[in-house]
Image 1 (cartoon, rainbow, N blue to C red):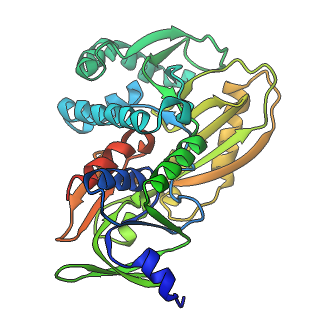
Image 2 (cartoon, one colour):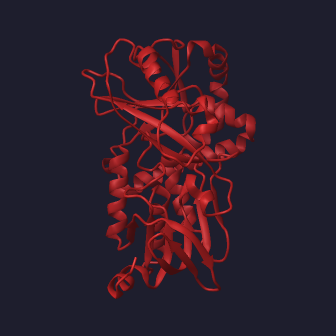
Image 3 (tube, rainbow, N blue to C red):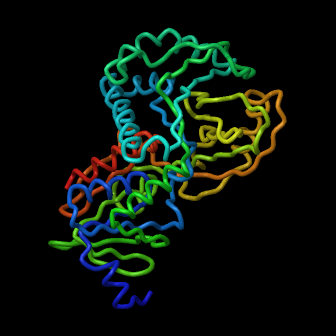
Length: 370
C-alpha cells in the first residue's frame, strides 16, 4: 500500500504503543495505557474486519469454572494456585462490568449450572462429595459459598437428578460488549486499523519496526494480545483451540434460563433471545480442533445437535439458525502469560478458554508491565 503523507502523519507516525489484536485484552490494554499516559499516541492493529479469535465469537459466559473443572484443576496444580486463578476470573469480570456497565453488557446473573450425564455417575457423586471442600477453598474469592445443589427444574433428559450450581455466574451479550468496548476505546482518541495483519517485527535500541501485509511502521513499544494466534508472532507456548458453536432459531415459550456446563466444561449452552446457544465437543477430536483455521466439522456439529435433541430440548422442535467457530489460546497451564519479552515488546496471551472472565484483567496487567 502506498500511503499518502496525510495517512502516514495521522495514523502511523510518532506511535508510542502499538497493540496487536483488538479483542478484550487488546482494547482493555489500550484503555489502561491511555489512563496511565493520557498524551500518548496508541494504535491498535486488527487483522479481521471485526476482532478475530474468540472475543466476538464466544458463548457469552461470565463464568469462573464449574465444579468438575475446578476439581480437575486441583489434580494438576495446588489448591492455592486454583484459588488464585478463580480470583483472577472474578476480578476480571468486575473490571469488565466497571469499564462498560451492566446495561452495555446486558449482564444477567442467573447462575451457572453443571449437568451430569447419566453415564457419568461416578463423576457426579465425586463432585457432590467435594462441594463443601471447594466452597471453603473459594470462600475468600466470593465471600459466600459458591456452589449449591439444585433440582432439574428445566426438565433436561438423560442427566443426573441434580445440578451443581455456581450462584455467582452470569451471562452477557457478546456483541453489545465488544461494540461498547470499541466505542469507548475510540472515544479516547485511540486509533484502530482493521484488515491489517502483522507479519513480523524487529526491535531496535529505542523502537520496534513492524511489518504488516499493508505497510511498515515504527513504534516505541509493541504489545501482543492475539491469544490463540500468539505463537505465530512470539516464542511462547500457546496452542490454538477451535470452539464450534451453533444457535437455534427462536423457540416459542422457551423456559430455560442461565448458563449450563456438561462433561467437565467441554459442552456449554445458554439462553439468548428465546434461543439456545450451544457449543463445545472439541474433546471428540483434540488433534483436529487444535487449529488456526475457522470452520466446522460434521463430527462436532452432529454431536451438538444430538445432545440438543436428546438432553436439552428433548420435547421441543427446533431449527438451527447459524453456526460458527472461534479460536482460543490454551496451554499446559491455565494461568495466562503476561510478561515482558524484551525492552520494547510485551504480551498478554493464553486465556485458557476464559477470555470474557479474565480478558479485562490480563489487558490491565499487560498495560501495567510498562
